[in-house]
Image (cartoon, rainbow, N blue to C red; front, top):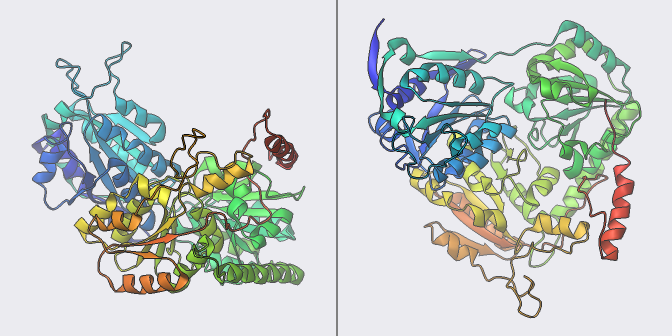
Length: 620
């Protein structure tokens, strides 16, 4: 057997360069490179290996959490068929990646994490940044990755690497098991060598399968569909990852079943498709939530059925409602006591089209769908057409950006009140035109995620919409976008604090406490003084990007037009009125209210909360 003498780090990079995936006959290199920040825990190992491998590109970021977000967004945009590896030093560099790991795993997106670790040989312990435990010498801060990783391993000897690397790839390329994969790399082991077999470095193609549904389950699902009077489809992210949008369109055009979308599934049908009802659940449209309330059959495709989608189990009030869940993951397929179709979304939709035969919904149901759509379109037009302020309303800003953007452009967001308003209002025209991270709703994802989206498809204009709270948490990757030459159009909405939680705080009787960016007043001892005079335009300009402030709708339109002509990242700062909110539409979210309180307002809200909880369903 031919071998090659290499360090553990050199062997790992050599392996990663030669990993490919294939689906439907299309082959793709799986790793687009490595993101990282070097420290003593990885510079002499992974750093040395990358230095001698210029054909495997290294990208320098400014924050370890951000680089994982960039990798996640890149992979999501590529339908999970490509990703990055992310390397850090030991200690704080490693733990900075934990939030990113949770974001990837919760959203079922593959990312490989390579944190440096403490010495495996232990004789010099405790080393710099080592967490000591009186119970075990085999504990480090990297153990904190275990609950947020789909696969975790620590490479304590060079000869362990081939077996861990193969397991890592198995998980990363699995449609049902994918997420963050962590290989902790002790800094001494990274630099140790071994005779690695030559076949470890040969090109390896991992086939991404499209499993079909069990025939008996498929026939029963077809029976349920043919018996349904008021069916509804919930399209989740699995529709997009499976590239099943065309199959979904054919199925709904054949059957007349309307479609509502989750955050991850938005774009499964274009906004103006006759079967498109828009967003569902807590951040849903009046059309989707109306049809969900009375649906007798819900066909959930590639969705986790989270509380935002189900309105905390209150969305579906028909006492006879049944669920068919199409999903590659068992954990999702069995939710809501559903009839589980463990299958790839595209394959299942194609099979259901055949099995449903000549079934179509009644004409009266089609008319109901049409009226609900018309009413919702009018509501969006109303919000887009507001002439509020200045400061502008958030809905007006969304409308202005949406109307200016082209169908192939991408909007990126993650946290605050923007995701809910975008879910309702953004008129998506392309399956990849809407990129929201809402599984973890991670503040700070937006700019880093926008960079990943742009890297995945540089031909598209990317509009990062971010609130001032998220911007202040992680604006550093503006510098990285300049470094790499990837243009982002950043629309920064300044509402002087945390607008989303401010509204929720008011709704639970806490009057926005702790959600405003204000000076502390000596008279009250509280943060209720004047607004902090943060100059976001100047802050953005200090990174070296063009930055402007837009006060009016006309200012914003001009700024967007100028931004399109630029060839680099730019920032448009817009102050918005946090008190002018997009309404909720026949939906509710379970946020428990204090059962005992001194204020009458909280006691009254708690009483209403108790009434609302009684509408939660138990699907068992």
